[in-house]
Amino acid sequence: MSKLLEWMRRHKIISGIIGVFVVILVLVFVVSMFGVLRVNQGASFDTASIDSSYQRGGQETASYSADDGVDADVSRVEIREGSVQIDTEDTAADEAEIRTLTDSYDGYIEEASQSDTNTRHRANLTARVPADIFSSYLAAIRAQFEVDDYYIRDHRIEIEERTTELDIIADTAVKYAAMKQELRQTPVDTERINLTMDITDKELELKRQENQLAREVDRVRQRGDMATLAITLDQRVSADIWPEDVGNDIRDQLRSVIDDVVSIAIAIFTTSLVVFMTAIQWAIYLLIILAVLWVLFRLLRRLYRHGNK
Image (tube, rainbow, N blue to C red; front, side):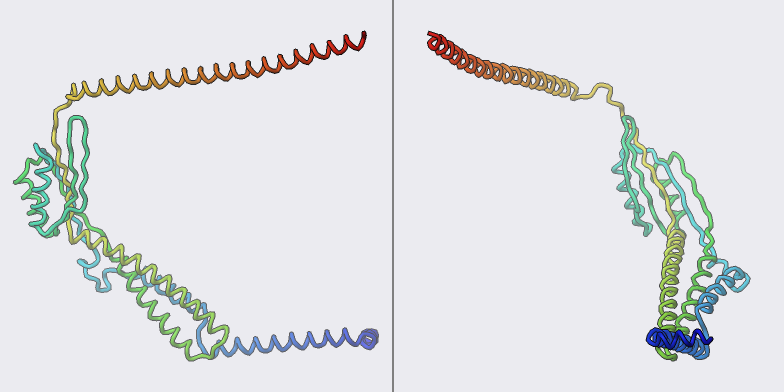
């Protein structure tokens, strides 16, 4: 201890800095502990309670059943679907008649497409009509057109689980709104801001889940309200063994071949001419160079002989 005191006397500046740093740490610790106690006592909830509220909602979903008062007609949707194949002599005319018939039954054509082969012409329609008059609509089609084959399929889709989840999400959203209201009564500090942001994030996630579930339920209910009938119009056509325009095709192909041959010949001739002219040009250059060299050689040889004399 005496050595420590002696060192502190010799190094007063360093000792003072260390002392100030220790005091600051103690003050920060005391203030933070006081803030935590105030939030726990004033707000009466924390992040763990926010998470557990939605977990309680999940437990309610698991224990919720039709015995709790849900009507059986609400918990499931009956779907009516079918298909019909019609032999026709005129696809376009029968398609127009089907559209008119569908409109008269308060329905509509949802999709339409066509496909052709060498022997058949098909038109594919997807008709939607109210489910309660679907049988009458199909009977009218069978009576008006030459139906080759058809089938009807009735089935049910359960939506109780989805609707229950929507109810739980709505209840959880109300709890989050109450938590936010309670937070507004507490002093503004870091803890309140963090809790508010946490609740807001969870509300956004709940809204996303609610929208997704609502779309799924709406799609199922729309399928239940409007029955679906897939209609195929099948028209047999004679195969074209010898097309009428075969002469024109042969003439066009022959003209194309002649054009290709002429183009190739012109390209070969042009290339050869270019090569020939280039060779002549280089030959002329070479002859000029050789002539100059020959003149220089003769001149030098004459000078050499003149010098020796």
